[in-house]
Image 1 (cartoon, rainbow, N blue to C red):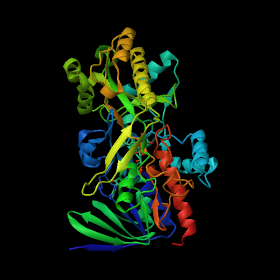
Image 2: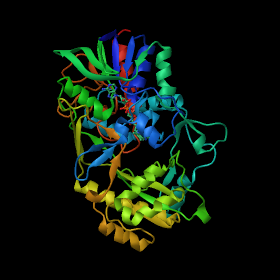
Image 3: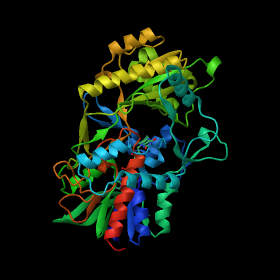
Image 4: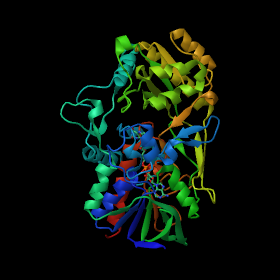
Length: 480
Ligand SMILES: Cc1cc2nc3c(=O)[nH]c(=O)nc-3n(C[C@H](O)[C@H](O)[C@H](O)COP(=O)(O)OP(=O)(O)OC[C@H]3O[C@@H](n4cnc5c(N)ncnc54)[C@H](O)[C@@H]3O)c2cc1C
């Protein structure tokens, strides 16, 4: 039997873009219904950064890949709150020069840097963005120590966390969307349907009129006045394409590709350096924006994965996992990818092409990151690419660099953007300057897909600030 719902504004997806849109619009008096494909999972009911979390809160258990040479593994949150529930919580405002470049290159109207930064300030308050009040994890101190010895710029990145007074890094409570903007939207009357996957938006010419969904195998329909698609940078273009919307949609996927290594430290001197339930809050920015270094989730299962590229030589290290932590080198990429919905397939096909400059930067990044680890007193470093040597000395780094090829590396990303870029330049952009899809009267995008390029820093604040700006504009123009 088909279940039917009605609303003024249908919001697809409850992540950084969807939850903020819902709060602003519900508070402005609109009748808001959010549909979320994934389940509601209370923060704290699964262990952060664990394989259990990947199983419950990630799309396809976190095993998704953009095809290319090399292919790039990517992960998306799939639960109430989307990526904000599972991510590292590291907060960066969008850089001013990035905002200015986007405004001029993509002809984005009403996009004053000061206005965006004022919204960022508001977000910082709403999410309790702050540094760790107490002790840092060993993984954080390693990155800081190594970079300091080299004289490379590094620092602590504040997070959206609350802490008991003076508490250490692992005692924070992540201020994700299920704790902040979603409850705020419910207080203002918004409703959410979890475990509801939107399959198709039905259009009549320029107007979208209804949505077809599936819930527990049963059909659901929703009639609405306007629809705001916030499924994230991979799902949003696929949803739009299934609705027959294709202009500049899904053709400019931008990511921050990363390569990884595991580093082992002497237990007698450093104790256990692995903190499975947390990541480093330090980043090395000496070579930013082209290249940044940080800490990755280092749960024992992920340590095993990070050693698989050269298991024959590296595999025995897995039994020493408490002495190992994983780090990444991320780059800004010139390359671009495609997202294509394919009839009959649940997930879109995703491809990504790294340029030669991107591939070279990944190699340089890994070499510099290994240098940081040696300076921080790593005994052994295990770079994640096929045929990599164990790095114990500076001389080994030269050997490693000569053996590296991006095509042999386990490249991955968690920062996905730009598949429906916004701006009034119709040649470059899928939506207008405020997220209305070109060629439609009532289909909006309001998530990471709108970012014209990957911002060069962790993107959630950029996603939220732009989504809040656009939602306010919508509320100003349409009476609730
Ligand atoms: C592991 C990880 C670590 C990260 N670390 C950081 C960090 O430290 N700092 C930072 O700034 N950023 C980080 N990010 C990135 C950040 O989480 C994203 O930029 C942000 O969540 C994007 O917001 P969004 O609204 O575009 O999409 P999401 O937050 O991904 O939300 C999209 C939601 O839409 C739902 N959805 C999709 N399709 C459908 C459909 N058909 N029907 C119904 N619902 C649907 C999904 O289930 C999902 O819940 C990280 C991401 C990951 C995955």
